[in-house]
Amino acid sequence: MSLAELFFSKHPRRDHVRRAVSRCRGGQKSRPVRFEPLEPRLLLSTTPESELLDKLGEELANDTAFVLTVDDPVPTAPEAPVADASDATPSVETALGLETADTSAFPVPLDAVRPDGSLIYDGSAAGTLDAVDETDTFTVNLDAGQKASLMVWGLGPSVQAELLDPGGASLGTTTQVLQMVPIAASGTYTIRVTSLQGTGEYGIWLGLNAAGELEAESLGSNDTLATAESLGATAVALQGTADRLAVLGVADGVDAGGPITGDYFAFALDAGQVASLGLTSLHPELGTARLALDVWDAGGTALAAGVSDVEQVDHAITGFLAPAAGTYYARVTGDAGAEYSLVVTRGAALELGGNVSHATAQDLTGVGQALGSLRVRYATAGAGGTTTPTSLTLFDGQSYEWDIMSDGEVSDGTNDAYDGGLELQVASTWFPGIASADWRAEDGGRELILGPVTAGGLSVTRKIYVPTDQGWARFLEILTNPGTTAVTARVTIDTNLGSDS
Image (spheres, rainbow, N blue to C red):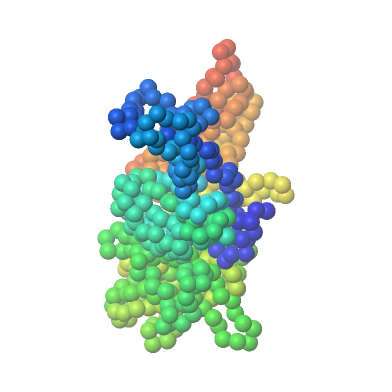
């Protein structure tokens, strides 16, 4: 384990940061270079045909960037006597350090943060700074309308991070946390990490559309109403006047027999404005870590408590109606070190999950909109296996439910007319289950693409389309011969019709 990995494994931040792996970089590349004094008429002309050579005669790439460091010059005596003393000008010898600028693409894609549909994404990178003032540069493409947060840590060096827009203008610098910087234009953004003092490994975290809890970074306390961390800057616009607030935090823990210590977050509501809150563990494999959520007013009165009988989040408060205009407070409690996301919607509902049919539809009365996601249903494989999706549910224009399986089956989920529907077999080979990472969608998520896979010497892809204005589902088989000789294969569509009729 590298020093950076060890550092992050003990640092109370998100899991992907703890898994940061440092890059290996060589030291500064320096070679001695001798400079002779130049007469004014001796000018260096650079043309496209020019070659840049170092002292050893090696050509330097024309697309290489360098940082030049020059030691104090040391005068030396002329190498040979000259007839005219006025021509005797000493040469100077110095060391010229050539260091290649280190620019890397920030690791993408960024991770989607629970709950699904939260609009929160984040990722991390790590590296090594070998000298004071050395800079590592990362580039990342961002879409307009988002907000970016940075956190930087140094294991040895004191480091500074800077975010620059596509035009090179600085959007802010920090030695710890830079929160919720508006991304005004789509394009390539740059993150610079510089050693201010010392050398060693560092880590950098990039988050989109959520703040990081400051207390988790030892930057103050939010354990009371008076010290609550404001969520105002985290607002991301939804439809109309609705918006969404979000923070990623770390629970303080509950002392046995002592008072409950919570993390307080402040948000403003107008009189009669509706808000929904969702609290979600970032480590579902560990359960909810005894997380709990409630809402308080400025006078210290508890107004609502979260419930846990929902699918989309671990604890939810839905349809909270502000009795008066003012500041309200969400309090999060849980086991020490439990990492969580808190999402607050104002003027919109937060999808609770389980709303897969007319009978289980979520009520949007009073708000008319919801923040949510279309999800793939998962089944966990046995020991040594992998987790793959079992189905994706889409509703057509007449509200019929279609269940699309990972192996390309298309089943009617409304009345089970196709119990094992439209299974594809090519050259006696059944179309296999496709892992979730390989699922692709087109046409606004209405057409699912599975494959290609190889069967009978052919490349096979299945597309399933469910329209929003018609009452049917359609599938298309695409078979391609990747070889140079003809292939004959039997193609079968197998369906179990009306088994429940």
